[in-house]
Length: 62
Image (tube, rainbow, N blue to C red; front, side, top):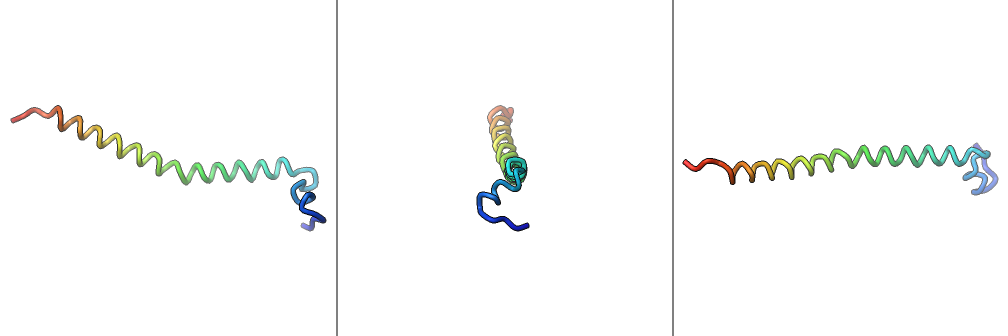
């Protein structure tokens, strides 16, 4: 596809809004899918550490 100017490239034949919106949404979804597992792992590790501390503090003494 050939464009006469950068403005024409951005306009994409009057479909630019939909084209760039779809690229933007796709980028957001990909970034979210890359970040989410790390955030969930961090939260899980924090919850497990809290649970272990709670169990250690409430364990019956022998």
